[in-house]
Amino acid sequence: MHIMEGFLPWQWCLFWYIIALPVVAYGVIQIKKVTDEHPESKPLLAITGAFIFILSSLKLPSVTGSTSHPTGNGLGAVLFGPAAVSVLGAIVLVFQALLLAHGGITTLGANIVSMGIVGPFAAWLVYKGIQKVGGSPSIGIFLAAVIGDWLTYVTTAVQLSLAFPVPTFGSAFVKFILIYAYTQVPLAIAEGLLTVVIFDYIIKLRPDILRTLKVIGPAKTGETAEKSPEVA
Amino acid sequence: MVDKKPVILLLLAVIIVALPLALYNGKGEGYFTGSDDQGSQAIEATGYQPWFNSIWEPPSGEIESLLFAVQAAIGALIIGYVLGYYKGRAKTRKEEELDNHLAASEQDKTELNKNE
Image 1 (cartoon, rainbow over the protein chains, first blue to last red):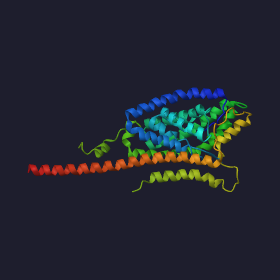
Image 2: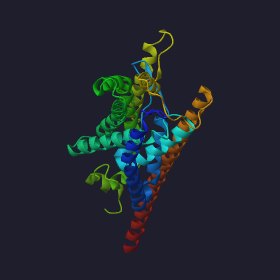
Image 3: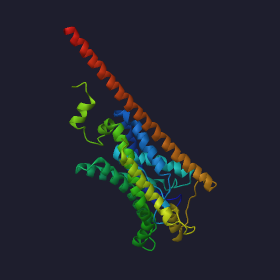
């Protein structure tokens, strides 16, 4: 999903920066708010950032015969909301642009929009939707992570087809979708499975934080009675 | 009793990632290039020339792998540290609760004895 340095005309670089920056600014405010209100959530924020760090560094083989990397953005979107992930994503993308020549400073805005905004926002919507219809948190996080990963790559394909509609937008879109989104399908599923494992573990260790962040519903009555014997 | 769910999920993830390597085994070179590079090549094929180059590039593939490995290691370190801290914390909390519970029942007993 990384658009390489200089690989977008400057007008598009500017355009995506203008979309990305307000969201990142809002994300910084959101992160400050949540860590002020619930300081105990800070380590969890570190986990979600680190998860993006790991997954976006792993270039995995896909059945299409090319390699691509997962994004790790679904976990953070579900735990802290999409705006917070735009900040975490931006940090990772700056690191990769400066130290790895992967992505770029000129294309940073476009890359933040795909990995830090569209993907996480879709993941967050999916999780909330599944929560609303009463699906289990595991299924919710799985689908959220798969969709968040996959739509990141679809967004890159859209961005490139808009910038290079050669010969037409439609045919360019097919070309870029084949390169990015098609390769990404199995990797998105693998990311979904990994995200379920870490999410389940967090639920097991710290259900209290997830409840204050409203990620999972309130504890069942039997559970609270068991955990606080002093009340009885 | 070990929870089987994470083991099964991790195994599935490994299979998804390892399967392509088996499928393309022996087909020679040229496979498994990065989709990001293919995207850049497709753009260059339209006649576009990038107008800006990276300020610094890793001088070789080895150095690039090194930096990617460092990136993954930093992430793994943080996740391992925090999850380990959470786990230790959950364990001590459970022990403390048990101690309190025992102390409370001891107290009840002594109070009962006093009343008698």
